[in-house]
Image (cartoon, rainbow over all chains, first blue to last red; front, top):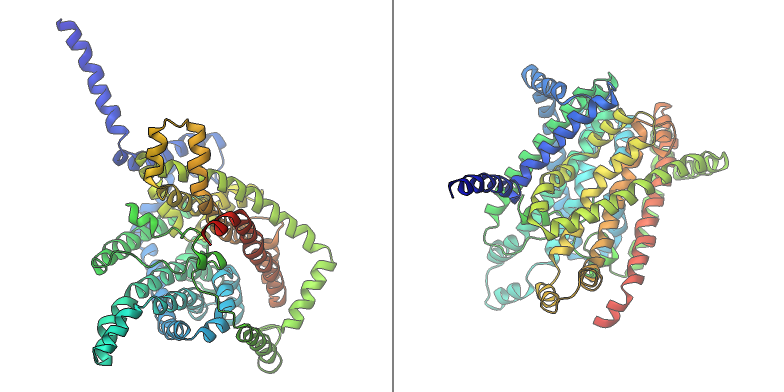
Length: 278
Length: 279
């Protein structure tokens, strides 16, 4: 009797561990661990200096943080991103509202918006580098070019999505114009504005780092391309991890928490501007 | 990442009328004249700027770029490099699509796989393509494997997320009914799963493709000795704006034709029955 209890206790603990490992919560941990383990196992098999070991990458990652070059590189890039995005928002909102109000203006711009959404940022990066050489102007222009179609399309969509019936009701009750704008138009537009910011930021960022490779001598895009040029493989991967780190930061904090909080009253998120770019 | 985070990145199913006709949601107004006017102003403006304001090495006129394109085709370079790019593109895209769809279905069916892949998906969606292009160009050198792996890494999450949305949108009652009537697994896949996610598969293909051709050119630019990306780099190093624009236009025209005419036609043909059913 005693013996059977003893033997059954071991598998029970074992089962509990297996249970723990198969929960969805554990899966998020399993995935990165699996990647690192495979990486560690496969890297020596290939035996190339071009495929760095995880430990080398970690070392490089920490070195970069201590040296501080990575922070200044990203800071330079974020300033460029901010300026380009601000320009894109100001101009994009005006144009977007116009296109939302006038079907003819929309028809006029439609095909160019499509081209603007699909034209590769790589080409823009090369073009601005030939136009402006190395500096801030080229990358900022590419941020603008990359972000502005997303702002325009989302704002135009927001105008079309404005609740006609609410506006009509406000009119029939003789609500003052300013109040209608403040209490009906702006609240219905604001989620689209947020979507415009989000897509503008994401694509502006992608355009920026590409532009920095060709048209700058500083910034995150330039640094990671430089790592490749000198053949520092672990440096490239370590830099890639910083890119991932900042992506998570922005995605989780700004677009997770903040937008959830801003739109806690709204049941549905707007889903305009569905084009994608690398 | 929770469900909302994922769905915020996914495309709407193409069955939305407005979304079927263009990549993003905008009703197309048939004011043909406005559109024609836009093209005329664009081309004339370009021509005027290049003749009167900028020297041709800054802004070559559209005529010059067209001549360059013709001479590239005549020299035979077009065929060699374009075919090299297209080959890599289709191999990479096919693998990305199959893998991405499989992962998307797994994520839609089980919470475990959803959590397993969610961080990977979010990271690859938000990280610039440049990062993947550099890493692949570095690891694989000049071999065609570089672009193919880069396509798989970047296009797959876009496929996955759209297929995942499709699986999540399968009506619960259909699944329950299939369960109650003890429908066999293959029959369930054929009669419930596939028809439900078919429109999402097309959207997935479109979005995946939009990323795939760009990342192909980008990876070729950093690590390849052939292909459109390699040619763009060569022209850039020669400081030939004309050459850069000519090669870029080949690629953009090809992509727009593929996205708008081939993929959308296929989609429309495939769903003709639906439109009639709902008309």
